[in-house]
Amino acid sequence: MPLQLRRGTAAEKADLNQPLAQGEPLWITDTGKLYIGDGATLAQNLEPVVGYGDEEAQDAAAAIFVNGNHSDISFDYLDGSNLINATVSVSQLTQNLDMNNFNIEGTGNIDIDGNLTIAGDVQANAVVGDYKGSVFGDDSVLLVDAVESAINLEGTIKGNLTPASTGIFSLGTPSLRFTEAYLSQSLWIGTAQINAEGASIDLPAGSTVNGQPLGEIGQPGNGLKIDIVGEDSSLIVDSSTGNINAGIVAATEFIGDIQGSVFADDSTLMINAIDTTISANSITTGNILNINADLDYRSLTGSSTFSISSTDDAGILTLRKISDSDLSGDINAYGRIVFARDDANGPAVNAIVSGTDTALVFAVDNTSTFTDTSKFFTWTGSGLGIGKITASQTLDVNGNGVFSGDVEASAFKGSLTSDDSTVIVDAVDSSITLGNFLQFGQLSTSERDALAAENGMVIYNTSNNKFEGYQNGVWINLDDGSPAS
Image (cartoon, rainbow, N blue to C red; front, side, top):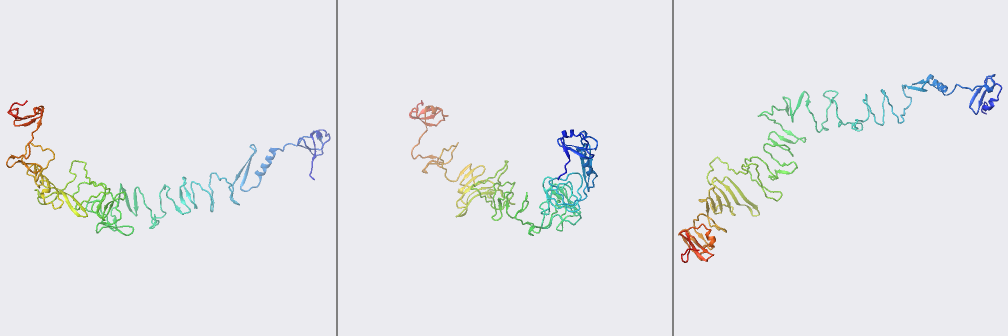
C-alpha cells in the first residue's frame, strides 16, 4: 500500500484549531501546498513550505555537474544566465565515433597516428604526411588518380619540377614517350645549353651529329654531312649519294632535283613520277630557261584550253634557239609551233608555225614532209608570200587568186581571166578580148552630175536612155555628138 500523507482541502485546514505534531506533514489537495507542523502552531495558522522551486533545482543540478568527478569533460555554471557550459578535452576515444551527418569544425589540427579512411571528399589547404586516394583540384580536375596510379598533368604546374637526385630519374622511357615538348627558353643537356633564336635553335660550339662536327653551317662552304635514318631503320637521307628516300616530304620550297611524285595540300597528285606527267589547274613560274622534254598538256575536264597569262607587256611565250654559231638568215628556224596528232593511224605532224631571222612561216602539209613550198604562207615584214617561202612583192602569190567580192586598187598590173579561164585582159600583148558583151555603168542624170567626171568616161543615162561620154570637159550624146541634157 502506498504511503499517503495527511490531507484535506484549504477549507478544512482553516477549521483545524489544534497544532500538528512536530514534523507532521499536511497536504492541501486543492491548492497543492505542503505544510509541516512544529508541535505548537495551530494547523490553521501554519505557512506552506516554500524556498525549493526551479532555481533551487537548477542550483542543485548544476552542483552535481560542476563538482562531480568526470573524465575529459568539465562544466561551468552561470547562475545568472541559467547556463551550464561544457568543455570537452578527449585524449582518446574508447569506441568508434559516429558523426551522424554532422561535421567536425573549428580551428586546429587533427593529429592521428595511423590511417584515416574517409569515404567522401577531403578538403584541406595542405596535407602533411602520407596520403592514399585520388586528388582533385578546386575545379574538379583529377590531378592524382589513385585507381590508375597516375598523375594527370592536364592541370597547371605552378612551380619547378625538380627531381630528388641528379642523373637518376628519366622523363619518359624508350617505349613510352611524350609526343611534343614546348619550351620557351633553353634546354640543358648535361652542361650544354640549346637556346631558341626566333624560329631557329642555337647549338653550342663544338656540337656534333653522329660524331660529325656541325661547324658554322650558316657560313658558305660548310655543310652537314650525315645520314638520316627513320624509326624503322630505313635510310631517309643518304649523305653519300645525296638522295632523299621518303614516302612523303613536306617543305615550303625545294631547290635542286626531285625524284618522285609531288602531291598538293589536298593530297591531289600533281607530278606523277611513274608515268612522268604533271596534273595541275594552273602553273605559275618565272622565266623557264630550258625544257629538255616534250610539253604534253592534257585536260582533265574535257576542255583543251592551254592558257599562258602575263601581268605586263613583256613576252609571254618565247621560242629561242641557242647556238654558238651564226643563226642569221632565212634558213634556220628559231622556234616552231607544231600541230600534230597521234591516233590509230600513228603519229603525224600536219601543220607548223616557224620563225626565222627574216620571216614568219605558216605551213600545212598532210604528208608531214613540208617540202612543197606551194603549201607555205610567209610574212617577211614587208611582203606576204602565198604559196612561197619568200615574198618579192608586198603581195606575192604563187597560183591563182579567186575573189568573191570586189577588188579595189589604185593600179592593177597583170592579166584578167574570166571564170571559164578565158583571158579578158591580156597584160602580155596589152589587149582586151570580150567573148560576150561589154556593159557600161547605168546612171541617172542627177547621179551623172554628182560624179567627179574626167575626160573619157562613158555611161548609159537612164533618164534619157542614151549613151553619154565626157569629152573635152563636157558630157555629150555619143549618138550625134550633141551636148547631153
